[in-house]
Image 1 (spheres, rainbow, N blue to C red):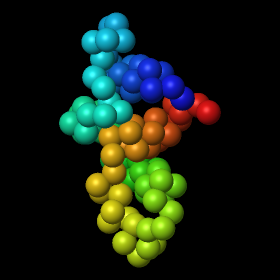
Image 2: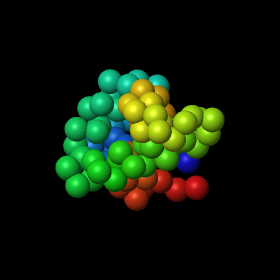
Image 3: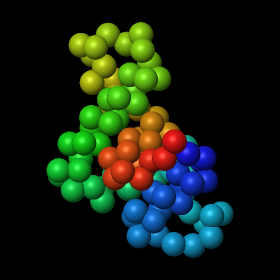
Length: 93
């Protein structure tokens, strides 16, 4: 997905509408992603955590699997955005 399509998809999932330039920059703003993540239900958050781990390991394959889950807590905004979209089945290749 392009960065713009990711921003639009996340904003729409959060109920935001408007022009592209006024949407939060979810891919580089960890605070914006934190707000987006709050809209996930507990059940969705379980899937989100799994997707976030997958994103982390994809970008950091050298990470020891025993600590990787803990390291995914420091995932980037872009990794969180991808995991969020995958959780909601909004990610497209």
